[in-house]
Length: 312
Image: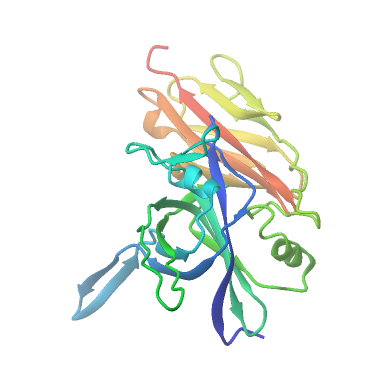
C-alpha cells in the first residue's frame, strides 16, 4: 500500500566522491551526519514554454538538480575536511579555513518517516558551502542553534545515464530488500547489488571486440577490450561506416554513452558507428559502452575510433 504520510528526518549520511585518473567515479563508505533537524530541497532548472495557436504549444523543463538546505547540530570533522576544504592539523588539533580551498563532491543519503516504512533517498553529486556561525547567550532555557548547510545537488553521469537522485522503499522482493537494507553501507548504483553483508557482488565478465567492417588489415586495426577497458580502432581514409562485433553472454547488455554516442547504434552483439562526416578528411569519434548484468557490477569500455586523414 502506498504511503499516505511523510514526516520526520533521520539517518543523514554523506559519502565522499573520488574521481579516478580515467574519469571514473568512486564513492566512499557513507558516514553518519548526526543531529540533523531540518531538510529542504528545491528543484533547480527552468521551465520553457513555447506559445502558438493561442496557447502553450510545447513545454520542456530542464532538470538541473536541487538546491538543498540541511540544518544540523553537529557538523563532523570528516565532512568539514572533505566537503568544505577545512584543514585539520592532527598535531595541534586545529581546524583551519583556507580562503582558496576547494571542497570535494559527495553523495548525500537520508530517510523520511512514513505511515508505512521509511523512504530512503540518495543525491549522487553534491557540493556544500559554509553555514552561518551563530549562537546566543544562555537564558532560563537552552536554545540550541543548528548550522544550516547550503548544498547543491547536481546531475552526474553514471554508467551511461545522467542521474540526479534515487529513492527506495521497503519491499519483500529479495533484490529490493537487499538494496534497502544496505542503503547506508554502500552507495547504490544500478547494476550493482549488495549482498546481506553489504559487499558488492562480483563484476560482470569482460567482453572482447573485433573489427567486422572494414576487414582488418591495410590500415584497419583494433586493440583493447577484455581486461583492458580502453578500445582503440583505426580505419583507412574514406571509411563511411565501422562495424564492431562484441563477444558477450546472453545475460549481458550494452549501453552507449559519451561524446559521439549519437552516431553509434548498438543492437545485440553488433555496434555500428557512422563515420561519414569524417571519412574524407579523417578524424576521431569517441564513445563508451557499458556492459551490464543483473546482480553484478557493470564494466565501462572507452572507445576511440580514428579515420585516417587524406593521403595517409
